[in-house]
Length: 464
View 1 (cartoon, rainbow, N blue to C red):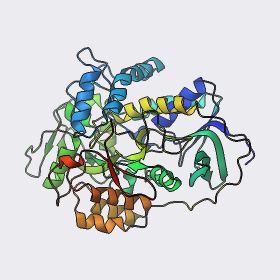
View 2 (tube, rainbow, N blue to C red; view 1 turned 120 degrees about the vertical axis):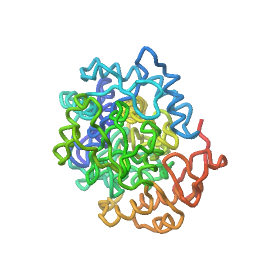
View 3 (cartoon, rainbow, N blue to C red; view 1 turned 30 degrees about the horizontal axis):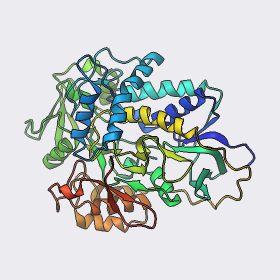
View 4 (cartoon, one colour; view 1 turned 120 degrees about the horizontal axis):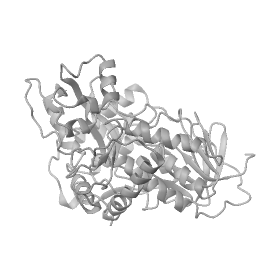
């Protein structure tokens, strides 16, 4: 290793990582960003619906908090929800000041009691926000981005993270933030880019960090059949309806996502009817639907659920700190407890903005690394997910699960697939996005967060 350690090393180039990079650079830090693929192909870039934030005249942070907790099924960490909803409006206003061309009208999405979702062209929010942040980062001299760089593991010595291990050698930094997205592409049917297979969970746990809430994978109810094209919840907020094989409505379209996803699975063949809504509010999305061979003006569109958002992840405090000194996590890689057992629609990009900023500020307080870093550990092999593994995870840890299937998946050689199954086996109830046909009731005794630390057993903790 010839170059001097960076002030801040960020793994991932989505909304959380870009936010952290810009915040740190504004304060004079030298930032290095690594991305597994090409920077534009992050989960944030594909996010559609928008960013929730209480900026409307009829809205408050307290009302947003109530809706977030209700969706989270009594499992949201109250302090994290308070941070998200109170700091959220300011983060949205910052984007407006930066020039994000939000639509003039706020959207209504499932689980929200107010129109509070800021969107761009109805369903192009992730692209608009992430591309703007990426342009700003690209114009910032103190931020360098290295694409197509696999992070194989963390460089940890004397209980402190010194950086990461890559195929081209180690990269050192005063502090490291994992903003690598989630694990939803480990499921065969997913809205996520193919590389989102839970690498942050795998490398952090292998290095000694705690992970939590891995049983909670949110499945988006309305994804175009045969594709990963998400049909945003804002469509249903504007009046789109779900129809079964008989052309009948069968569910409250604006119920929380877990309820809608299970109702669709129970019906089998389901279509989303867009004929009576103002499709002109969603020009980009309508073009994508037509490109896939469907005419939303004349026919309902076939949809089914797909793995969408990883609620669990690497355990952090409210400033992104993990169990390992010098190591932080933010966005979908982190488990702050803010989402409980089911994420409220459009809280994800907001989470990236709020907690990405907090992680950056905390990371800059880390002490300088030792002048002599010593030898680096050997690099692990690149982790891959075969089509067979993805299909197994889809079948055995899908929208509806059973203990027998989870037992089988727990024996998987893939560390994240195995962890998901172990967590899901421990939660012998159904709550939020986690539904077991062999334990369909909610158990008040399990109103907590399952946490696993290397070398220990799963433990139920109560976070405030």
